[in-house]
Length: 235
Image (cartoon, rainbow, N blue to C red; front, side, top):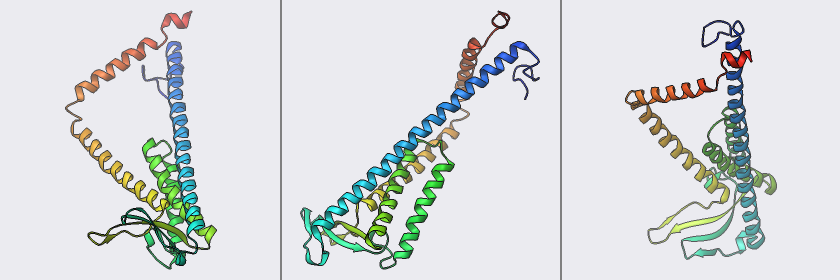
């Protein structure tokens, strides 16, 4: 490895050797900070997963305890005719998709969990927003998979939204489905607006070249002031 100062081995010159070790120390501190931050982000994302699963299973348990069997119970209105608690047993995927196809729904849920897990592991130093979003999606998918494992292949759905004035009604869903939908929507926003910011930064790259050069000079000056001198080494 060559020294950035004289393009020779950093250990051929005593001053450069000390400077080289100092720069390696700074880089090591920066890497350690990045790793520590990534671990904190992982813990926060795991907390999101736990909270989503806990709330999902708790609400489903309340519905099953108070509205079983579903054929003999009347729906419970929450907000007039717009939002109703309507208990059904869904053997398909989210929002009653793939009805009566439990195996395919389970495979889709497992695939979603696996993709999110490997993506987070591969990009372990990603931003906090992405990890929290993936926590929402992973928690929702895991909540429905846990439901199928505990209830013999079906999922408890109970949230029914409709607008009777225009004859509109949405598929009955649960909190896990809502968590997945919110996560996908937020992920879409992050990708779209994040891409727009990167495009804008590339467009203004040349216009801000002088500012970036001046900032680099300031950073170089500050780092030079921290580097050891000949006198420091000799002393």
